[in-house]
Each structure stands twice: as structure tokens, then as C-alpha cells.
Amino acid sequence: MKVHNYTVYIITNKTNTVFYIGVTSDLQGRIWEHKQKVYKGFSAKYECNKLVYYEEYQWIQDAIAREKQLKAGSRQKKIDLIIEDNPLWNDLSAD
Image (cartoon, rainbow, N blue to C red; front, side):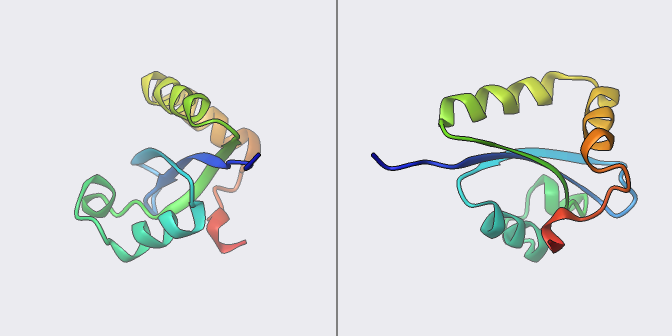
């Protein structure tokens, strides 16, 4: 049986004022796309390319459900989640 790996992630801009939440099966590749502004959408427009939070899931349904939950949550809940795991708001894609 193939093991799947899906990631729900939060990226922000350099001043940590705008959040983008997404889901992907290739986190490293997707972050590269954000940093290179491959797609001219929300993240490119608002300069969101700093990975500050992520969670991994085996099943896409679980990842999508979590993405929707995070998007529906308040800004403060997102901030609290990020600070819990990444209090300095470091770019986790640099690791």
C-alpha cells in the first residue's frame, strides 16, 4: 500500500500581516512555487512566501478538512497556532 503524505500549511509575508493557507502533496515544491511567484494569485499579490506553520496528514480528506477549519478560524486562532510551534515566526522552509 502506498503511503501518502499531504501537508496543510500557512505562509505569510515578511511583516507577518497576511496569511495564506493551502494544502499540497509536495510541500517543498509548493513553497518554491510561492517564492518564485509561479502563479499570479493571492500569495504572489500579497508577497506571501514565508512558511510559518504546517501539519502532515496521510489522507487528503483529512488535510482538506483541516485546511477548511483553519481558513474558517479567526485570525487570532491562526496566530496562536503559529506561535505555539514557531514563536519566532522563522521561515520553516529554510530548514
